[in-house]
Length: 287
Image (tube, rainbow, N blue to C red):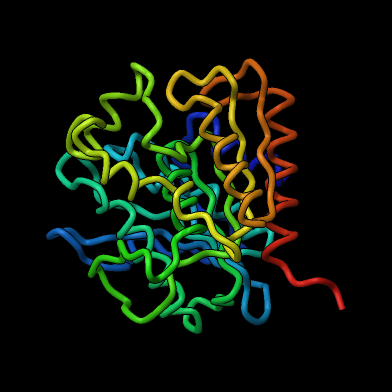
């Protein structure tokens, strides 16, 4: 049931937990960079008993790139720590005050910070994953597909360290911002990009994870409901097409009739699949 709790924290309305379990070291308000006049912070969970360098998972909250609170996923990082991961829930700058690519720059800065401090936090810098949902899933996919030559690194901090992750799980994240948005998503995308899609075609292209997919990218697992009012399931199938063309491993799971989140038996199944996916791609094989 520990694995099932991970996705409960992701897909249901999160509740701010009081204190971390005794076997988890938890660091709040760790500054990972500075950008746009703001301090960028994360909360970090580290298993106390684990030995050696550990895989890490970055958790990215949703909220239309405009709001949200990293602390609402503190308990998710604790659960991940109990599974043997160092886990960070990150904050990032919000639109419309900070337009794209600020949010991408911040997510990449957070990964660079973890690698720059790998010894301090006992992280294996070659085994870092990212999980997010909605806007956070978009950022997670950007971390898994963008190469150094693609840019959008910003100047938030920890220069010289890679920002690409080795595994991604996306829950109902948009993959192609050139696709016509739904009525519900249109104002969200416009606030993120700084204007209507017709006037921001280049920004849409640069903000689309599907456009960066290439051989050697992180394996990705995408969960997507077919009745999502904000992110049509064509976003997921386009990513599947791009992954197949580039030879990127992973899979897309369509949840027929479900929307922007789900519960019940599908929640349990998604939890099991997510834990298995990260274990497959981030944990070393037994000797």
